[in-house]
Length: 384
Image (cartoon, rainbow, N blue to C red; front, side, top):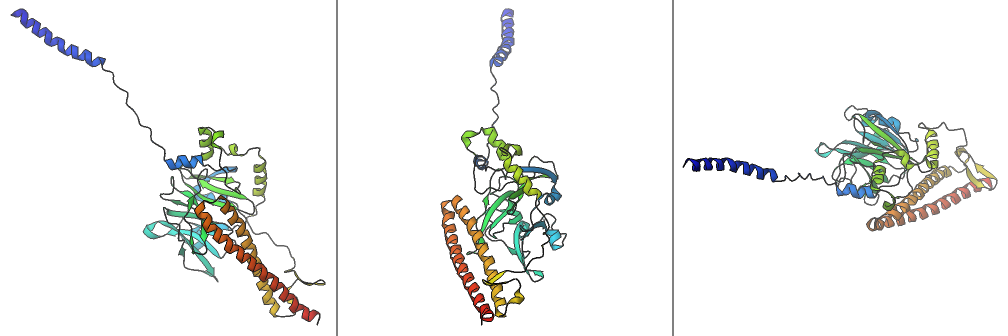
């Protein structure tokens, strides 16, 4: 009996050891760590990165980034809301004033206490009541940093919202004069936008220099202001010619030097930047006007008109000529937009181009008629 009990005890002691040995033989599977999936929009945007020559970049205090943006007075003026409206309520709101000084675009608190964009016209010495920009609110919140091109149609701004890939993104839209509202804004993509905050996209058409601001890779309170050459048409990189890492570097602007090519375009751009005069040039003394009356007579002053009504007609002539030049410049841009637009936008653009062409034709006829009328009236006094 004692032997049996000893055997039972031994068996009892052996069982845990056996189980322990079995446990040791069990291989623990390594824990699988799932990699976060990139937002498909970012991947798609990277593959469509635009080819841009970045001339230079400078890191400045965020509160002082406007000082790094040099534009000709003919482009307009950028300033803060508080300086422009002499207020202390909106230190983070910005204003763009057109080159004529009679129309401004600015950000301010709107519905639901979010930042919205407004416009106002100067009437005499006063500014009209702010009017919100309509048509740009789909997928857009906290809009700021406005900039209108000289054509009065092409508008850039920055905004947060569902159409942004991170913080502020830069958007482009165009004003529909027939509908009295803006078209749905489009994200301008990479390399201008990133998962950081990107904003204040500005084009000085006179010098062919562009700027934009970003806080990517910057410490708190600092931003980087990039200078670039505005493209005449949209060109993207050939995906077969670049590795994935090279494309990532170009999309994120890891190095401006990677965009210089042979350096000639950058050298010319630097010369243009150095020639920018941020203050209006002092005009040289010159004749106020030059109007050919006949082969022997040219007026250089309005006081030379013999027929008083011709002064009014001359003002109408100059106003019509100015409007014609604006139409011609706008048509040139519309045709560029048309060549790069999708099918839906081309339908709208073709209608607008046709209307502008009709206006161009009518204005040209008006100019011919006004010139002829003024000359005939004056020649009655010169050659009675």
